[in-house]
Structure formats: C-alpha cells, structure tokens
Picture 1 (cartoon, helix red, strand yellow):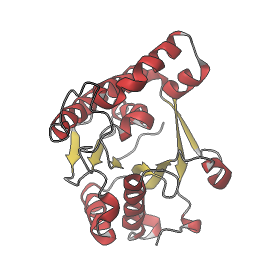
Picture 2: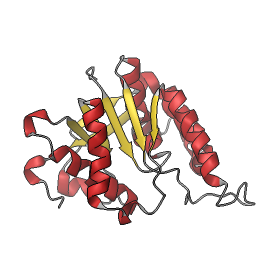
Picture 3: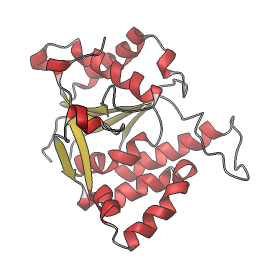
Length: 227
C-alpha cells in the first residue's frame, strides 16, 4: 500500500468504517499517512438495542459516540470529525449542502485519497446519499487536481455491473486492529462477532479472507451518472 499525503474517509454511520476499511485505515496510519475520518451521524437509529434493551433510543447515540471514539483510537485515527447529521435522514438533506460539507474538507485537507461508498452499490439510503455528496464535491475540482477515490461496494450483483475490485489491500499486518475496531462497536456488532470468531478459530477461508483483505473500486469518471 503506497504512502499517501493525506487520506479522507467519509461515511454516514459509526461502524461503517469497521466492516470494510478499518484494516486499510490502520495500515495507512502505520505507514505514517495522516487519516481524517468524517462520520456524518452517531447512528441514532441503529437496529440493536438489546433483548432485554441495554439502552433507550435516546441513550443510544451517547453509547455509539463512545464506541466510535474507541474504534478511532484502535485504528490510530487522531482526526475524527463528527459532522452532526441525524441517522436515516441523510437522504433528505440538501444535495448541495452535503456536497459543500465534503468540499470544505477537501479544501482544508487536500487529501491524495478519499474513501467512501460507491454510489448505486451501497444499499442503505444514507450510504447512497453520502456517496453522491462525495462525488459531487470531488467533481468540483479540475480532473488533474482530484484525489484518488476508492469506493466500497457490496450490493447484490454489483460486480456484474462494475466488474471485480480494482484494488485489494492486504491488511494481514493490522488484522488485530481490524478486529479491535469491530469489537469497539460492540452494541451493533455483537450479533456477528461470536460467529466470526468461531469461523476464524476453524480457519474458515471466507472469514480469513474478510479479515486479511479489503476490496475497493476506483470511481469511473468517464461513466459518472451522479446528477
């Protein structure tokens, strides 16, 4: 993984980073690259409140904020931005205002690499709105001045349309940080961590592949369809 000048990560929810890019983030930081993580919400509408409930809907954002801070610490992120939007409402925000928010980060940080979701292939409405805002913001820059954009895609059959991943990062050296980021978000990841750890103990190939490798698609500006 080449050293970058600065990496900007933009996701809407706490734990979005943990599932698919926490190894890549940790590796960049280990390489000496500064990373800024802009997390748009505190995941107020997260599905898991426990059974019996461990908190209320009003209390969940406080818990998730602490978990986000803990995950950032595990990965080594020193510049964590909590942008103050509300979970499950990103899709209803002004397109221009969302793009303005991302563009302000681009102007401040001058990242050489931006990591976010791939528009059209990231399932959740908040994911999609965030991805479109990132595209709109980067598109304001001249083509020769744009940072690289590495996107996460996971919708059904996405490879049929955008092909196999362009980048596969080997994050084996920071697999403990990746697991640590997942564990930090325990209120939402408890449902899968036990199963994952059982699979890893059994040397399940799919679980090992998930832990050691992270996949990204470079955004194709020649086929840009974001309005």
